[in-house]
Amino acid sequence: MPRLQLAPSILTADFGRLTEEVQSVAPYVDWFHLDVMDGHYVPNLTFGPSTVEAVRRACDVPLHVHLMINNPKDFAAPFAAAGASRITFHPEVAGEPESVIESIVGAGCGVGFAVHPDIDLDFVSKYLSELDVVLMMTVRPGFGGQKFMNEVVPKIEAARQLVDSEGARADVEVDGGVKIDNIDLVVNAGANIVVSGSGIYDGMDAPAAARRLRSRLEQLAATVGEAS
Ligand code: DX5
Ligand code: ZN
Image: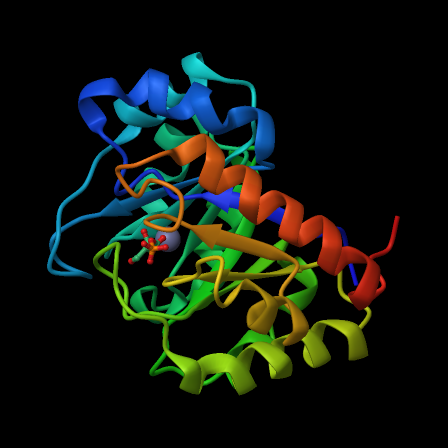
């Protein structure tokens, strides 16, 4: 099992104090997860490259941009320039995902597929060798603070098996509804990167929430046989 990592989503953070919100949890996390929504792929609008730049200026933690937009190919370069280290998109929006992968890799970023809860995993294997991450959605994309979908757990296990059986380098990441009370479930199912939005930016004490999730991952590392 690759190293267990924590990735806060800033979607439910207080954007009026974004720099402070980012810097308060940066010491306890491995990535920041930045949800970009266009009001078309999902019924919500969030932010663009300038917000990614603001997070980039606030910390040196790697940034993972999760594109929930209909034209990911057009935005690979602007988000890479804004400071993204990794860019993930929903391949069902792209006629030919290969050209989107090329645009993201060509812009110097790691690349990933986001797998919608209603979409099968099968199509991933064709591209797996080119991917740095498979992002398993455990809520329907579009909003933070939704309830975790337990019915997706077998798909996380299947993604872990697919990656391990193919000897692929891709991380298996889960996104949506993950909190301290179900983080064990997703790690034991095979996820090595955990996104948490409202589980950290809960409007109370984000650094304490991040520390709790971090120390739980450290405890779990011993049980799941984390590779050093
Ligand atoms: C949902 C986003 C998630 C979300 C996670 O479409 O992709 O990243 O912000 O937030 P929580 O952990 O609150 O579900
Ligand atoms: Zn996301």
